[in-house]
Image (cartoon, rainbow, N blue to C red; front, side, top):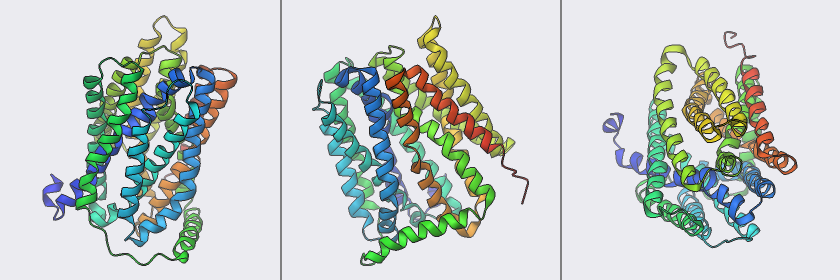
Length: 412
């Protein structure tokens, strides 16, 4: 295994454990359990609850996209990363635990806690990710990143299984206690990252560092648009990535509110989707070398479109839950390949000397418009229904697919 060849194996494993620590927040609170609990129990109104929850996701995306360059400057200069990494981790953990307290009708109390926790989660990830180039050489970055992603997958699954074991009766009290588990999990398993990942010596932070970060962003944008295939790919990815963000944010809510899933069924759905995501990443990771990254992205987008349409028609069938299970497994199979192959293709389209610069822009553009899908989903649900709102996801995937296939990859 590549880890045995690394001199700083302890640091790499400790850094990777951060993904193991924080993944339950995304899996349980954002995607599968708390969002659905919020709309069904705290708000008790599908239309208003979905609009409010999707708006909170949008607020997070906007705040993070604005603050990321600022905190990116702090990360680049070093010396401040560990402080802010710990600060945002503890904030996310504490506010996750505080989600235990909102009850029926405590709508804005619950939303405020979630927004702070979610923003802290995203900003903590900015600082954690900034350590990667310091931990390994360029030719090992993909392996180290993949190892951390794998640990995150294990962390999300482990937390789901533990939640079902500790709280087998998923009544409102049990679901609220799961938030405590998520917060404590994050606090405990992030400790190795804080203890064993070392920081490089940084400069004294000055105002010019913040100003330079925005200038650097502008310069990177001007550089990216010189590479037309890279620019076109980033635009296509904006759309299909927004579709994925919307699924992550509102899939559990759709299952509970539209298809009448119980919270036990949603937890099991989360486990199955995580397992299918792991299988999909493994299988298509192998196929990527055989058929090429572009074909895998096309396959993933086509399957995502079909599976979303299956989820759309599921309520009209005689077996709505079974149909949604099919859609869910197909989506799970495609999530990993779509994301990993997008990163691989970005690497192929980026000049080697501009890898760090362009990948920072790649990460930022992935968040810059990610508020749009959830917000549109919430607005359409408020006026019509979640089922109609699902067309937002289909349209984003279709536009992404069409734009992606307009790129002439053969052209120099």
